[in-house]
Amino acid sequence: MIGQTKTAGFQIGVRRTFSISVQDAWDFLTSEQGQSIWLGEACPLQLTEGVSYTTPRGTRGVIRVVNPGVNVRLTWQPQEWQHASTIQIRTIPSGANTVISFHQEGLPGAKDRASMRHHWQQVLARLQTLLPQNEPYQEKGASSALLLES
Image: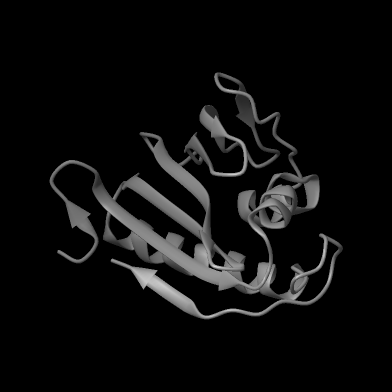
């Protein structure tokens, strides 16, 4: 089945290249505004390994890995799911540009994979409207090309 592996179950990955530095991308993604875009709610996370969180809608998880400027891994479990999935957010240098990547594994099924694929595509589209092009982080502008991982 598309998006299903033996070890990680159902998974989805999306990525987009932005004309900004890795540091600017990281600064935005980890800001309160950036977190509200990818987390989907106003719930600023303390990005420290081992910290638990619960969003206003009841999604809960634990920050597993934080490599500043590189990646964050966290568990993510909406109330209606029986098990947590794992999300990894990465900033990847690409010349003068930065690839922002969202990868989620351990999804309950194909329907949830499709739903989360749409969610992550919407996150990248929103980031495109907010991230500057080769300027220090502010709140407008962007560019990109979309790549999807299966």
